[in-house]
Amino acid sequence: MTGDKNMQTEGIKQEAYKILNQLPDQATWDDLMHQIYVRQTIEAGIKDSDEGRTMDVKDVRKKFGLTK
Image (cartoon, rainbow, N blue to C red; front, top):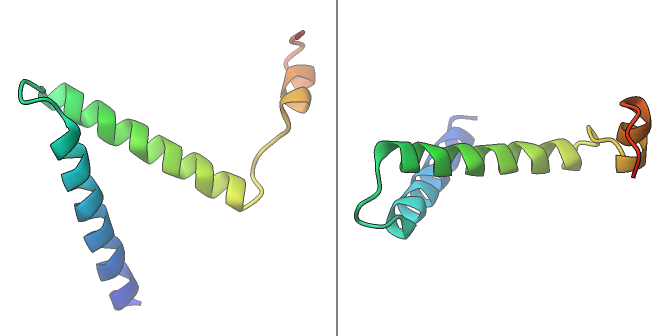
């Protein structure tokens, strides 16, 4: 189990370096935090989708009374 966590941490570090390298030299802490938040949110959504914790758009619209 520890090996899996270390591999995950190394992967996260590599992805963090990629995010840093894509930011402009004038980037702020807020810019960095936003990029990390976006990445984390996307990964959480993909995990939810992979694990079947999503709803069809039609069902969401119906649940909230939204029209197309």
